[in-house]
Image (tube, rainbow, N blue to C red; front, side, top):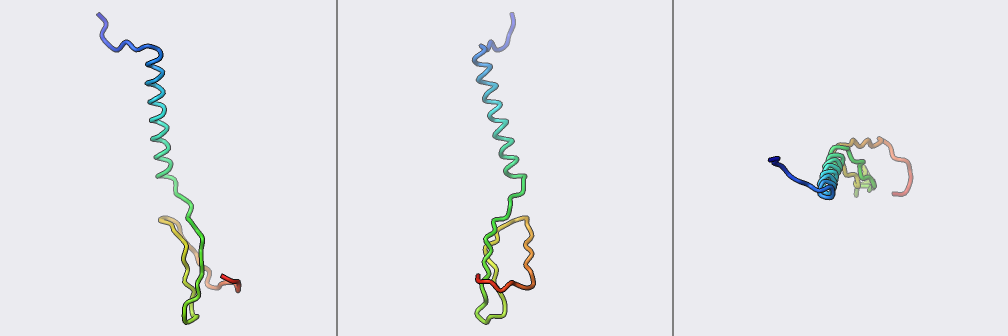
Length: 77
């Protein structure tokens, strides 16, 4: 006597579909966590109270570098 699962064609399709969806979810999660994200940048420069330096805010990143020029063009902030 042959032992094992007797699956209908419909059951096999459902099982394969569920496996495919799970694989896609795993790939999506891996891509989302492994690919570095662009830095959220909406930089704002605020002149200090004594007028001797600028305070830079609006940069959020865990693995990006921010390079700030030594001089700032004369433009409204």
